[in-house]
Length: 115
Length: 115
DNA sequence: AGGTTATTCAACCAAATGGGTGAACATTCG
DNA sequence: CGAATGTTCACCCATTTGGTTGAATAACCT
Image (cartoon, rainbow over all chains, first blue to last red; front, side, top):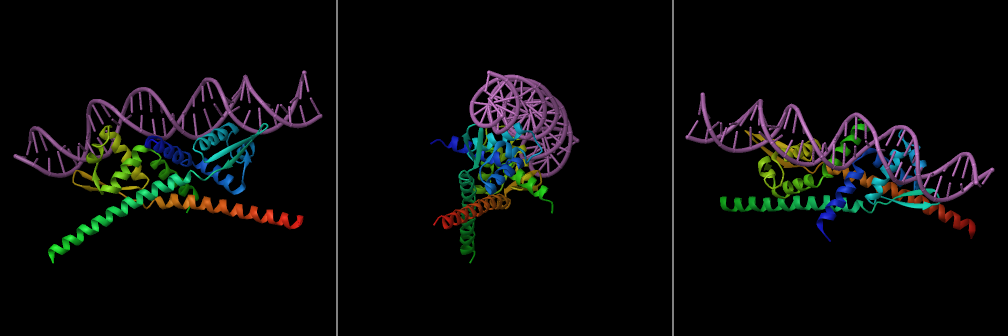
């Protein structure tokens, strides 16, 4: 699997949750369970279409799935993609600690020579 | 403390890391320690100015700090703000589990009535 | 002082984003 | 069938974003 697409996927997820409205939508879905588009939209001072578009962004990022029942679209949160974010930050932190370790070793070596 | 500014701060951080170039910059800084702007820029097929602007975005998000030594600006990674992201996702997950718990209780009650 | 180096500022540009409106498409209801 | 409902599609618009180039600023080096 290309790293490019992985990187792109991560960007998509992070961008999706970088918007306050979309975070709010996701929170609502997480705490109340699956909801219709209209129901969701009703809670925001924003057109139905705007909310519909936000949902599509979340959907593209995989943070939300859709079950179409007749004319009703049930939107449900899916937190799986969050793992990718956790992983990236985790990786970053371990790289960080690895460097600090190496730095510490270098300092000790320096002390050995001094003493 | 207004929640608005907190929300805005979170958006700023997430937006900062939602860009592939900026994630790469951050990774480089984390693994190699503080670097000059020019040094950083040299690694990308992109103008120095473009990189400089990316650094400013990371700086505004608090993911990077700057030490100006003469004409040289040393850029250093700072992973503290990542906690805010962790916290948000953590919160989201606990809300999720809380709902599933309540859902489970409701199902059990239903079973009680049936049996 | 004058020239080179490191970095930002300012202006510009194309593309993406977040929002709005009206029409189109399905589906359900009377 | 015809009307109402739920949702998306197609445009339009202003702002932001990521990039460019050229000028300005600041500091170092003869």
